[in-house]
Amino acid sequence: MATYWFQKTHEYIAEIDGEYRVGISEFAAQELGDITFVELPEVGATFTRGDSFGTVESVKAVSDVYAPADLEVTAVNEELADEPEKVNADPQGDGWFIKAKLSDASQLDDLMSKADYDAMNKEAG
Image (cartoon, rainbow, N blue to C red; front, side):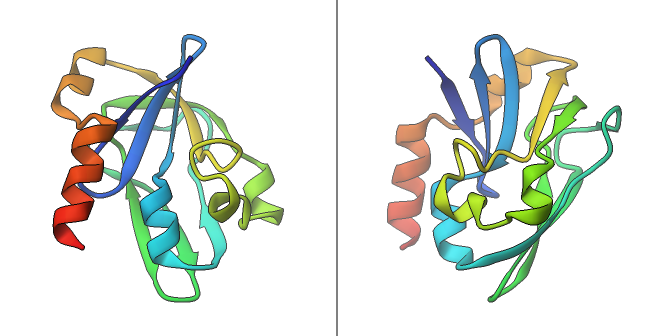
């Protein structure tokens, strides 16, 4: 069973079977439209919460993707290089961006639950 946390900039972090995955939310993928390119960091790169760790390009915009916590990249989703549309099809599943090791898991307490994130988007809409 996965646990998801979200940040206001529409990234999620999920704990799945003891590892963390980061990507953009279903809401963000829908808002961006057809995703055409995803730029991801190198394995081993480290980022502080709030740092941009990559970009996602769509027919509408180019957007930075921000680290939801202090982390070290342990894997990148290589499939997105050839199939960026996976982000649209399954952003919180096969469309994940990176796997990461967290420096301080207590930072997740500062993020939103799915219910709070959905409420924020509903108010903004």
